[in-house]
Image (cartoon, rainbow, N blue to C red; front, side, top):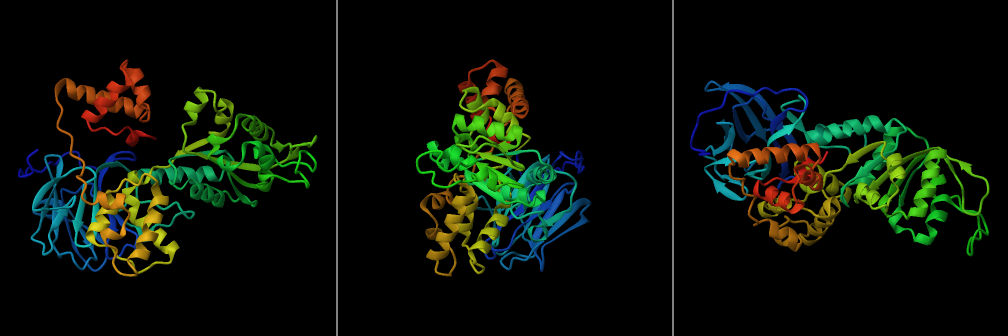
Length: 463
């Protein structure tokens, strides 16, 4: 599409009901004030968005030249009072610099006028804004500031609408006794989420976290379920076990996929009968448990391979929550950076434009844990001064100059039909490529080639 054309689309602009896609801008990071949480601006119903310097974060509706407009104000001293205009043109969004003093940058390159792709990164002064073309979201305010969020428990703050809706459901589930299964990559905050579930549950017992993969296989049952004195060599005293330590509280079984099969059978009995039999004992002990399990592994695949008990998986899956990786939560980067800096006791750190751009472009394969190590190292290396690109780890530095993703070429005819079919099946099967290939009667490798051709990311379809 030629961004020089200026015909504005006037249809299909309604805010819509819950689940309808809406365009957003996220204040994903401020280089001069990274300790401040960001904000979310909803562009629904607007045909023209103007962004510029203001005394405070603001979003005001108006009519300009006959167009429904939204004026966004950001308290950034390097931003001009009229920095950039973003306008809907033939169903797309086009950004045009408004003669600003310091210029407008799109994905690291200075622009005068350019079309915004979904996920584009606008750099205005010290501020980095992430554009999202269409996100499922209920009706909400034009401006949601990160500082105004009031999460029900620590670790539950988000500006991402889809994740916010999932957290709302999780908060309701937390008050029930049903087990919860947290799925997600390592470092996505599963233990933080489990602690939040316990805090919201109102249970008076302790929150007991157990790393199932860190216990020696020959000690799993005695560590979990306890043992009687003399039950085996070295058992010199009675030991209640970690399960009983969570009595009337919450038991987090972290990395449940690493639990050996014999221990899985014993755990299943504990959950079914609500009693635990210590090793060497003849009489079980009653326990009142709320179980939260967490894993980065595909338990369905393990169950299909008979490496994880299907009946235990069914018992643990009262409510399943998938935690998105950090690369799918760039909208929340300011919130997360702010929380990590506060935990570190750092309040005066600033970032150069190159360093901030690298943080937003890097894919963070180790998620929040990796980001925390990056920030703590940068805070030491910069010696209280501004964080420059050289203060970041080498993999993060390389992301600053990486080419942004190229927007997919338009597809027509049979190609468009195939792409639509892929999108429909990916939604139906929650991004499971193997299931999509089976439904299409094609080899998995062929489906993967089509996904690359049409720039479709199956991870984005996970529920």
